[in-house]
Length: 320
Figure 1: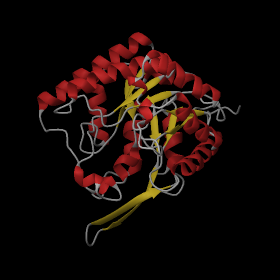
Figure 2: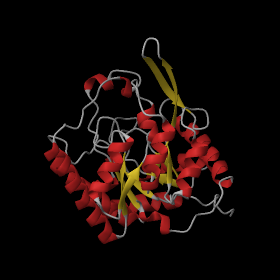
Figure 3: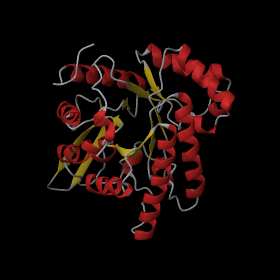
């Protein structure tokens, strides 16, 4: 179980709800990498997030790899975030699997840099996953989850290697005062609720919990466990939470499943139940609101406001 339950319950208006940076590209309009841009370029994006009403941001590494910034450049980023009025409660990594068959060792080293970067920025948690880069077929379709992607191998030795490497990151995180969270994602060792719980229990470190990104699984065009069952299995282990939602339609006569992104309050996942259940079972971590497609930042802001209303109505959550 996550040890965040020992922390006080934040007030509804003060609970950290971060914007993901998924909707911001990794390249500038002139084709240069955001990674190498002047800090003012980062600041422009951060001010856009703040203008949407956010007070917190997760510098998702599909936009900017804070783990690969020099200390001076990381200070530049911290300054730009502060000037925009944004705190950084967490740092999320994506497609940096520590068991990637080609890049696993490099990704492990990157994970250690991400832990140090989070500590430098005052972030309380780093999110890791065991999912790899998108397959070519996934890059060629409108919604990448509708095409098959890489799978973690059905190999006990690789599974144990994953457990060992995540535990190593957890020990490093403990030494610098941050947590590690593991993002649920299809066809990985965290690809179902039961698999995710088994994996985090195998890691067995108090600094390592789950990021129960239910949307990653509910969007799949295949049979999946119902969201409520996933909530009740995984949320007691959660220490950070990517939240998003999807419309989902299933035709039992043909087996057809269709999904596409939805604002949190309209999709198939009942977040009113999920948030209450999470808090009842000790969740005290930050949220990160996400959305794919269209004006993702505005939908994320709508999701933030909905989530804030839910928190204000949740028993046990104080008002500011």
